[in-house]
Image 1 (cartoon, rainbow, N blue to C red):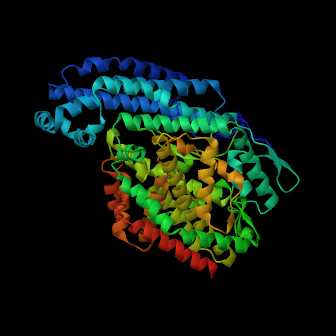
Image 2 (image 1 turned 135 degrees about the vertical axis):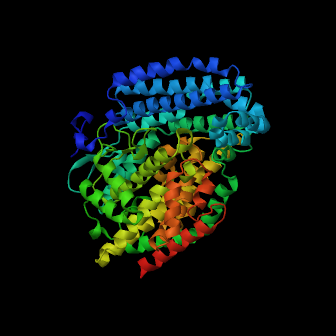
Length: 595
């Protein structure tokens, strides 16, 4: 099919069921109006909360229920918008939902300064008088821990009003990248003209026909190059808004500001980059193997995704993908498999790409409703792993939501990629172990090696780019398209080594990475990958203690700090052990693949 189908042409069985959240848009409108009206009660509930334990409890309970309701409103509007981002109705609903969250943040902004002002001693006195406040013990601890970064009530209220403005760079990029950008058509290698899309791009790069890979690569980055100054200004605006909050909240660096939310030491971020730099010779070795196997005199950036064992790359339908995922995740137990089936059959998943649909894949949802998964399935092995990955996120959320109250259900980003990547690791090991064909086994080992390259090394390279650019902004240096391209190209040269010819076009790749608009997010893919490889290896070796600890981890949500949550599974990310074990696995796979 040369053209993408329109949303209304999508088959219902392959679309998520948003009616499980709101039966109609009118129901959403009614709930929106109710929550908007409730915001006025914050002013009333504030009275007496500093003197009376019961009044404080009523305020906190009201705040939790209002945040839960607002989250549902926001998620629905955005997921409907993501079905087709060109639909004005859902663009409007999404913007209104964002504004509602800003209003909520403004009206409730006094709560954290209020608690900070009470202090630990007074709070303990209140808990002694009102046992219900004991439920908020961890909530109190997190606020008091950050006391030096919380401003007074009026300043917090003012900051809350800025959050909608701060979202502008991300919104601009999302609209450009998903709704406005149009890529050229290329020859698919069979004489057909096919349009490049974000969803199809990786499929083109995996083509055995080199001219297709080259045309897709040059066609896609040519479009970003044509808009480089706008994209640089958008990225620069996002860095500046993050720097603003860093300074206003008295953090010593942009990294410290982002990482403190989950109580992660900056040393974890820095040591990851240091450890990966130390192991770059393994990445260079893998690049050299790839060049040799492809028989290329010069290996370009567009040659990095083509399977090294192309004859083993099978077309895998979505229905087949579900069966493979169920088989691969069997070590997690019958309960987990039952929930997977429930998700597959219960309207959780939006499967295929359509015109205007948000690119990529994610798991999302709101408390009290099952999780949702957005895919852009392409009938290849990569999409099988994407299904396993996103269902890992979904079931992590499912377990957390059903075992934790709302305020402790949400887990931090630092551990968000562990469950998803653990699923991928279990699946690939299952496929390798059950393959009887030598060529297919080579293909699967190579696929796993690619996960190390793209999820561990590449995301760490992204993290390094973020650290460099944010520090430049902090030092007063201007971020231009030219200097960001220079930085990005040099990083690629260092990470890939001499075996790869680093094309000029790749210098624009920074301009198409959505996660850069959530500063200091991407490093957690690498730390999560290292933790997941460690956990999955232990589960496959029959370590019942790690499996039981992992189940506790899935159910614990945000009830503990992320570093402590991973310790339930026998992983300590404050030390280098998980990264070193990850690299040992990578080296073993390289040895096996070369043999």
